[in-house]
Amino acid sequence: DSTQQLRAKFYLDLFARPEKQQGAWVADYRSRLKTPEGIVQYPVIFVNANFSNSTLGDSALLSHDEVITLFHEFGHCLHY
Image (cartoon, rainbow, N blue to C red; front, side):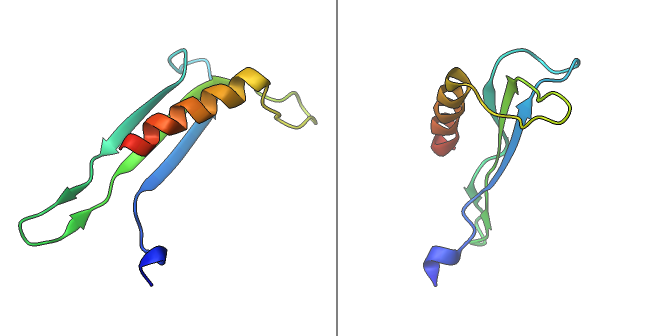
């Protein structure tokens, strides 16, 4: 079934850490490529952000602005 085939690998790194760069961004580790032998190399994409961490015992809920940022960055992700 062609709908069950691997298309890409997608990773999320959403929460802030002291050593992490500020802001939100998308990066690719590997692009899609078809070799001369016909082998397809699938893309590997990362969505990075610095959303608020939860406090101990609380859920890590995203704010409205964080949800907008997540969808914006995922839109970039689809281009890869």
